[in-house]
Structure formats: structure tokens, C-alpha cells
Length: 401
Image (cartoon, rainbow, N blue to C red; front, side, top):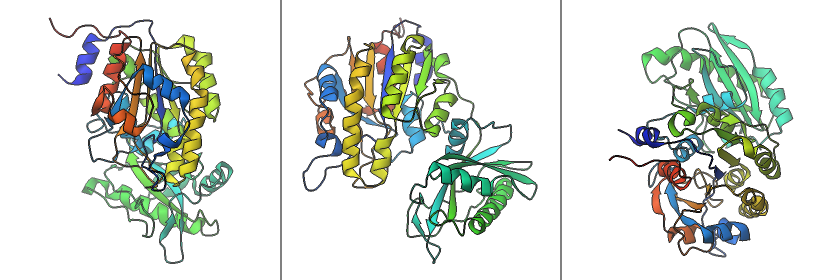
């Protein structure tokens, strides 16, 4: 019996409420000049006060030393094993923008990117082109037909789009074209087994056509594809936890992920303030809320230490709106670390705090990486966050005789 089967057996419905606040890319590294991380540098009195009343620790989204993607990081926070429960990035993007995926469709996440005259990637995000530009570029690529396969291209946000391959004879076991770094050319997509050769061929031809179509649209003069995937079959959070869960997320990928695990995705505005207002307005209708804050991750990927500090302070200023609602359990964590020093996701453990009436407070008095390292929760797998939240919400009965 695995952990989810145990939880499903002992979970009970109750009126208590859980709020999981995920600050995307939360963990950081110290600035060499100050010796402090972004979280330590930020003025966060409300987070510090909550940490002082609760219990803190560090979590590993996948395992020590493993750098997680966004989907595994979030799945772990929702209690799913991110190693055995694989949800491809393409499906997340497509579902997140309400694309009507049909049986047999294969979705991939795309980036508009910048190539130099030597064909090397100089910016994987094409300077984060505007949403309007993304829509224009997607219209150039949408609806192409290659070898009997139709390619449907839809904008997501900024440099990101979803490409869906629809037709007969497709198998999704192909590699990505995104090299995940700059200074190198895009990769050629290869079939990982003979059945996937048609998709690899069609995808490479689509990329070649996209390069021609985008030639005059610098800095977005090329595309990178990754995360070829199909709609998964996984148990919902309602089935496992007996919850009525809701998601508040402005970024499409996280809305898609929430849908796939059975959350109701609430309409919300794009700002941090909008998301906290949505929580307040919908608070009476659900007993579990996933609130996702994206900008800190973007700032980390851009290497912008100061912007990350300001975002943490912005979250802190809005935190009283959550606290006033008096949830039975508040969890504040991240899906992974995105230190500005590294300009990308990293393997470093992520700070977490848990507050409830029933928690055993430790001696941590601030919410930061070093403080959480000494917290009472210790360092543990992120998959254990949901059982802890459920227990503190008195939503679990005794296991065994």
C-alpha cells in the first residue's frame, strides 16, 4: 500500500480549511556581497510572524540533488509521487489555456527563442515577448499540415505557446528540441522508439517551417519544443483526500496542472493582489485552496535578485488578507528553488512553514532558508506536505487498529 492509498483510506470530510500558498521558485542563494539570500534580504514581517507561530523546515521536491521541473515540484506538494506520476509539460500548457485535447492528441510546450547568425540560441525566451506578439506569431504557425498531421498552435503567455499534433500514427516517445541553455543550437527531435518516428519527422519539419516563417521577427526568430505528452489518467484530489479543492493561479500551466488533479480553477486577475482578493471572495465555497505566485520564479530565471526581494515583500504585504480568513491550516512553500545567482531552477531544498492550532511550534522566528533549516519539521520529502496539512486540519482518522 502506497502513501496515497493510505491517505485515501483514512481521509474524512470536514469543515476545516487548508490554504497552500506556493511562491514559485521560493528558495535562493546568498548574494556574495551581503551573505544573504533574497528571502533573508526581504522585509517580511508577516511571514516571519507566521513562522514564529508555526513550525518550519526544508523540503526536497523530488530528492536531494535533483533539480525539479515545475510540474514535479507541484505534484509533490499535492501529495503525488513526482517520479511515478509523470505529467508532461505540453499537456499542462494546453489544458491550462482550455485547449480541447482530443484522444490521440500529442501536446508540447513551445518557446519562441532567439537565434544568432550562427544558429546558436542566445535567449531561450526571446526577451519575453509581449502577449500580443505571442498571439501574432502563433497565428503565423497555426493550422499547418505535415504528412497528414495537423499542428494547432495556441498562445499561452509572453514567449510560451502550446503546439498540438493531431492525426493518425503518432507515438509520443520523442526527445525535445530545447537544449535548456544558451550558446548552443536547438536539438534535433529524435524518436526514442520506432513507433515515434512519424512524430519526430513531423515535428522537425514543423520547426524548419517555423524558422522560415519567423525569420523577420527577431528576437522571436525560432521555436523550441519540449514536453511532448498526452492527457494522463490519475486519481483526483477529491477522490484521495475527500476535499473540495480550488486553485487560484494566473499562469496557464499551473491552472492546467490544477485541473488535471481535479481542482476547480477559479477565475482571477494577473496580480498578486488579485489572487488574494479571489481567495477572499471564494473562501466560503471550498475547503482547500492552492494559491500560486509566479513572479518570483521569473525574476530568478532572469537573474534579478532585487526584483525577487521586492516580490517576496509584495507577497508579505498581502499575507494579512489570508490570515484574516483564519484558515485552520496555512502552508507556505515553493515548488523548487530558483536562485537569481543561478538564473534557473536548482536542487536546493525549499523553505516551508506550516501554521495550525495543532502544530508544535519550534524556535524559528523568521521565514528564511537558514532559519527553516533549524526548524522542527527538519528536512523531508515534499510529498509529505499534504499528509501533514491534512492531519493538522483534523481530516485524517487513525491508521490501523
